[in-house]
Image: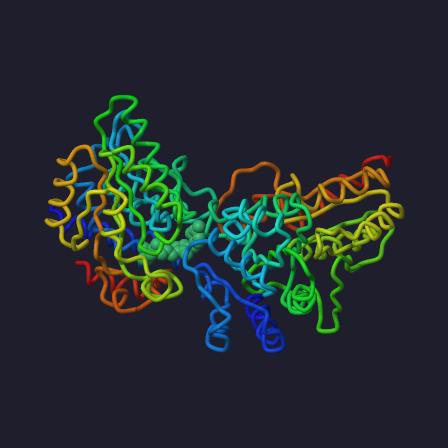
Length: 267
Length: 310
Ligand SMILES: Cc1ncc(C[n+]2csc(CCOP(=O)(O)OP(=O)(O)O)c2C)c(N)n1
Ligand SMILES: [Mg+2]
């Protein structure tokens, strides 16, 4: 499957997953799909038949509420059956709306209480160095999430310890729950902030596969420094009525009708 | 009415009368229902963004200048995420901050384990001088708010955002620190806090049908606890069952046992969460899974009734 088709299929399965529950975190799931498509088709060195394989690359989905997008990706990669996607948030499920390291094959860290992922990634990256693994730890945070001070403790640590095996992606979709991030508590200039902490940074269109791929290659080739890639994204990306829904898209319904229309758009 | 709606309507009235009240949110003003206050009181409402620890200390600073800040988030984030900030800047510093925890325990439902607080009452209760309220319905939160505003000191208040079955009618009078007597009975005492009062009431009614007379106490103030009401009831029935949407460790059960073991040793048991990892699901499914449903209350009550009195 080429990457355009792969990302469409991830979006379809993401909406299938949320539709099974009737509603959920549609916006922030769809905004990271293109990144997941690039990571899982070109970069993540993982083995679906051995999800906990030693020395693998890891992904910390710090904005843990975007679980459905990651579940769709993992299911399509063969980590577990696609049917699991229909069990989102049902009692006893392996797929809770916030990612859980112990429940889901392919999930490398629990998240959902925002702001903890980068620090956990620092620990994973340190462990990789201690064990001599040549593996990368990818982190995805939200833009609103950067308001949690712990991110900056993590950033200071990663930069000081020269954790060049960490790549942080900021999903800059410009929205949080209560409003536009710039209106609630502006986090910009994100690139300059990470730069000031000692990161090597880039800023790309988070829906441009080639730009994402190139940015990741550049980050991997630069040793001795931690990396941050700020992605300009659209919350609800890929489905017209979610893209234009405004702030409500953070957590919203996927009705039978919406699901049908979305699938048509994602043909 | 939804509890958040009832809460915010009453808070708006109180803010009109009292210009010391501040509202602080951490990106859950829309979810928690405080958003409408921003239009009416733009100078006294602040959304700090996703930064609960920061919010807590900003509130402590406002309180040190005589303001009365109400800070809001989901229960795990307002109580747990900012615990040291509450302990030092609010509690140890004796600052008059009101900490609101939405959707405690299983009422977090589909937000799942990361959002499910089974330890918030225990944590808050262990801090000195923090009053702890567990509220059951829209009437109770509205009636409690004037007392919450007038109480001078740190207070933690947990309640679910959505609509619940009503326990109290409009004539209800809230008295801080006092238990509500719902049923009078002689065979067994049931003490329930917050959301669990709804199921405890259903269980008590069902037990009455079976010929068991239940003394039912509703507890909104878990700390300071209405010790006398609990001792009086325990003396009468000799058996006390507590019911709470919280861990068995450190919450209502612990508070009741602390009182009774010292002043009136009594057979006790608890309907509470017993060291079980947090789950995701619908409220009813979670109630059954955690053994917090009316049927579970009846079963435990019958078990306790079968035991010999001490
Ligand atoms: C510590 C913590 N506080 C609050 C929340 C509730 N919450 C969930 S998602 C969210 C907004 C996240 O905004 P952003 O990071 O920009 O994510 P995105 O726009 O990608 O969905 C909030 C406040 C939480 N999960 N964790
Ligand atoms: Mg965002």
